[in-house]
View 1 (cartoon, rainbow, N blue to C red):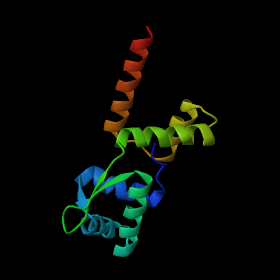
View 2 (spheres, one colour):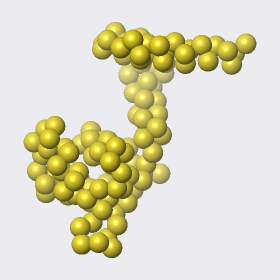
View 3 (cartoon, one colour):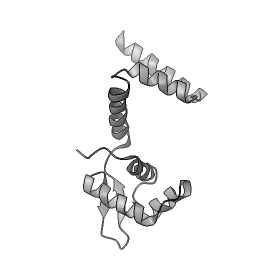
View 4 (cartoon, rainbow, N blue to C red):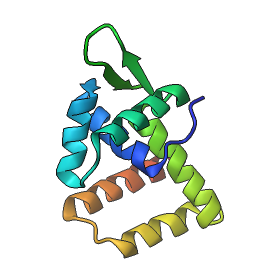
Length: 125
C-alpha cells in the first residue's frame, strides 16, 4: 500500500486526478498558476511520489508522463479516517459538525448532505 501523501503531494494528485496523465511541465503550470512553485520542485516531488507508489511514470516518451496510482475517493477516505481518529477521537459527528461550523456549506452541499443522511437512515430501518 502506498504511503499517505504529504500536502504538497496531495496538490500534485489533485492536478493528476483532474487532468489525467500529465507531463511535469503540465503539472508545474497548473500548480504555478495557484501558487509559485519551482519546476525542479515539482519534478523531484513526482520522482519521490513514484518511489512511494503514489504515481506511475511512463518513460516511453521524451517527456515523462505521470499518472495517479491512487484513487481520489480512497485517498480522501484514508485521510478523513486518520483525522477523525487522531483529532476527533473517532467521532464522525464531531468531525462533521466541526467541518460545517468552520466553513459555510452551499445550498447544494447541504442538499447533498441531507440526501446522504436520508439514505443512511433508510438503510437502518
